[in-house]
Length: 222
Image (cartoon, rainbow, N blue to C red; front, side, top):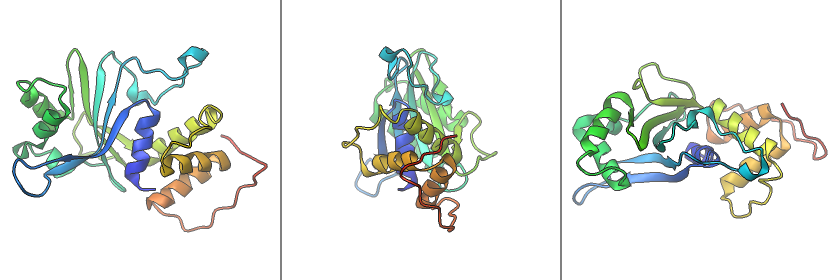
């Protein structure tokens, strides 16, 4: 399990349509200019299990204000940060990715890009565009409106989603190997064991201590 796949599942479980490794290609022949670790789009009326009368609550960072969310997420093992290509206006990479996504008329792309370069945030009547930085710890020097999420918070959400809705999520043969592994770990371990195991797999603050093997007949919940 690598951090980008964990990030993908966090956004997916929160109702986002996601693309990983969204590449920004050069204008002419040559190497790629940069890439977005996770590109996510989330619609404002998203609801799962609404017909049951008890819809799944998503992470508060996705609370809808009626706009379509567009998220560009950078994923790190350590300190939350945004790569140079996303913070240097002279590179014009933000414009390129906005053109590729296609949400805004080409005449507005520069306006949106400048807001993202300087604040990490843009919104109008239809869209809320945000830069996310995912990592082990928050960064005081990051753009003021960029959203920072640390791995403990992300993994805690994933664990609670899979344990609270274990039966609803039980049939998942179509999921990728990371999703199936996360579900199985959450089903068999305490929250602390789940977080420690996944962090070790991600090589984030690896703890080499041997974890106790779970008793198949028992489950612990926080």
